[in-house]
Length: 378
Image (cartoon, rainbow, N blue to C red; front, side, top):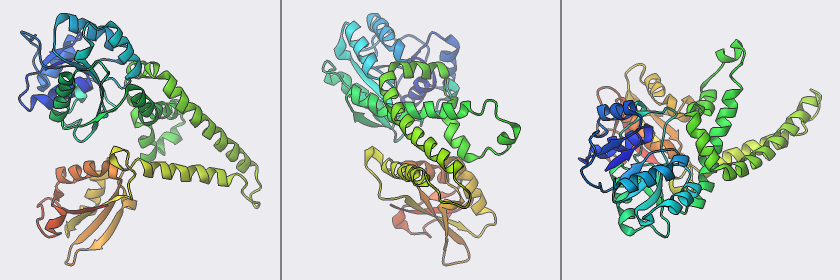
């Protein structure tokens, strides 16, 4: 394989497939980035002696066409895919300028971090994440199969979509959320000291992704401007309604009624319904939260350690229900969103809360450092 562009995603692809024994040739105009990726174990800097099976182009959407044409002319690979989060416009430009359109299939892994660069890369970044492929009418079966094999090596789940459907979906689920996070974070630039002292997890959750690379995100928003603008117009209408309701509430007498409150509560209820609608994987609504049973034993401080372990995954004290273990220790039941349940399971294992199959029962095994994950019931 070859990876062109050794930032977060490109280096993570190299790390993921290299662990399966695949030779990955790293290509980047930034020599320091390429050397850093190679030093991490993502691949080698040597040029391949002949065409590789597949080249992954990890470059911004606006650069995809020129880079793909350059590498195809060079004869780098037999098949090409990319990781850009916008597909329609780049696909049009790519197909118009390619000598062999059958060797290209668009791709987009639904994984990332708020950090950028090769040092932020992780071999497990794509595990259990959706990876969209947008084959065109010209894409050959051989090209599609090579991309599918690479996705499998990365531990991701392939999803086939049209490029327009993809761009409309990511405008709602990725691009507009980044804009909203940036708008909220921008309010903090000149915040008074008192406000910064009161900043809690909720604010960090809302603004976390605003730390992404501004130039890259500018390129993404430019490439998907129409779809993003459409969603933002709907958000603008909702915001205008909430603003009008709050203005009405602020002018209401303290001992009077609460005109406008129904509108505010209605929006909050719609937000809860929207969260429920995305909890299931593959777009299927979840019936409710996933419940995980963890045996903490009787060691002092284990519950505090558990909460500290899961804090950055959005699990807090409100999500924990103590249960009797039938002995001297304590069991707890965690109610977590289906979308993050697998991440919670991995964290519990990593931090000494060893996992056990639900069929094994709560007393099947206990880790010396902590408790046992004993069940998962939707």
